[in-house]
Amino acid sequence: MRFTKMQGAGNDYVYVDVTKKMIPNPEQTAIFISDRHFGIGSDGLILIAPSETADFQMIMYNADGSRGEMCGNGIRCVGKYVYDHHLTNQTVIRVETLAGIKTLKMTPGADGKIEKVRVSMGTPELTAAKVPVIASEETLIDKPIKVAGKEYTASCISMGNPHCVIFQEPDVRDMDLPAIGPNFENAPIFPKRVNTEFVNVLDRTHLRMRVWERGSGETLACGTGATAVGCAAALTGRTEDTVDIELLGGHLIIEYDRAHNEIYMTGPATEVFSGDIELPDFSA
Image 1 (cartoon, rainbow, N blue to C red):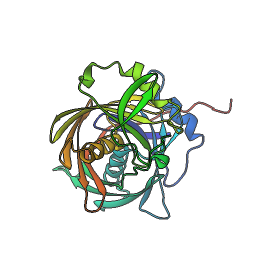
Image 2: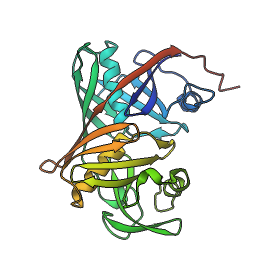
Image 3: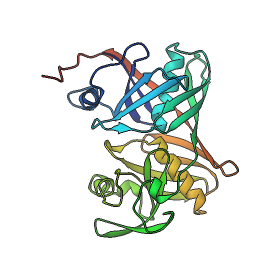
Image 4: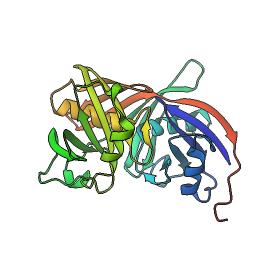
């Protein structure tokens, strides 16, 4: 199988062009290639496929083989891949995802290759039942929840996939996230599991976050997570509507257009390397 490894702010995926032929067993392939000891090593697998409704389709699998609806860092790399690998010569494209069609505006660098991508991430879904999160109120923005016997103040937002944003005073860099993250991911109030972002407000335009992603664990960045964080920070009055979010893998710029209730994300996209890998016989 021919592949290309790419990363956006450290959120790394293995990309495969399936515009001409789909690979078999993508769920098992995702688990195999994501293993950082015996596979290629990644946060998951992203297939670039044809679309009947957009220019391309992004088919995403998490590291545990589960299907993901959307990945902001991943979709930026899709844009870079299709442009740099000459699948398109357009710098504005539309990509179909399980969270809807996303529009990408790409900026080439001096070498003619894409170095930055701005993504229209769509409209945040605040209705608790649609996030989904089990709650007695219609929305759960800056409201108390209980996870593993401890109370937190949370904002639950869907950006095509579910997010739980926790603003806190203690430095997120000192957290034992591998111990805390699974409690949120598997909490009964999140029927489809959840991605959880733990956030420090540095000032009105700067945030710091760490993220625990369902199906992948802690990752260096999460585009939809950063989008949910930017939205929650603006809605609760903690920041301005445009923020620079510092993640373990780099920075993302999130812009909340209140007039149109739409959020934009801008960040880097980088190709790491390409190669070929022989897949095991998953039917054996």
